[in-house]
Length: 305
Image (cartoon, rainbow, N blue to C red; front, side, top):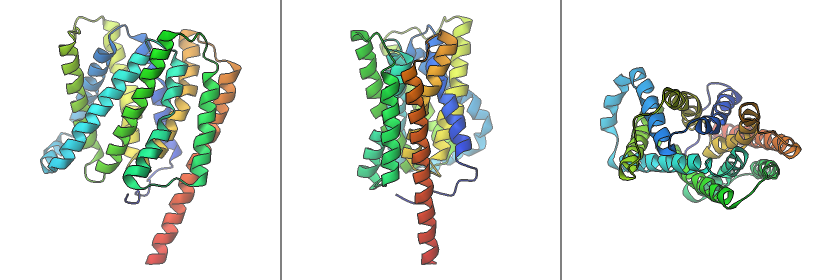
């Protein structure tokens, strides 16, 4: 894989903003009574509507995209839609904590995918950070009570959604070297919208007639977790490895659990507090490994001049 570009701002700033934004996703999904496929459809539609006026002059450059890249964009849109559909559905069966905890397994699949596709070998600090963060996610999971067959179904849906978003991230890392972030987001979100629309049509799911509250939630889903979360992470993929982005997911169970406590009175247990500390520690260790790797890369580049 080609070396990442130098980041123009401190990494923690966009990473923290993205982590906070995605923590609101399960809360907003729970607040809506609409089918998750309808939520996903309007989430994409409103995102595109907001983005469109910001870069209409850049849309004609889509004609220069190669055929093979259109196939990759199509795959990225499909796997993003699949991720949203599976993960948002999981919240109908299992707790916010369990769903987001399982989602934090994402770095494992991204690391394996990056190793296979890009020959990206993680260093010892990266592996340590992943292990510490994953340990924290498991500790948080022990605080989720009332397991049932329904909860297990939700856990499986969340697990499958992890695989889908890991594939999406790996495709994004590959294609963002040739396609601008804005164009990538517009095309992938449009393809994602298309898949949701077709799914709703095939399944005879009503796409209109929802209450005003639902439309407000759809809009918030577009602005907060999508634009301030996924779009920020897509932009960061030009500067950092995909595993770094997936490591940010380790913080989502912490933020989502706190929001669940405030909004749905889902109390945070001692296990979740201890696990949250592990999650944050793991993220810090992993980010430290990323900085060390970047420093070594710069020294190697300098020595070749």
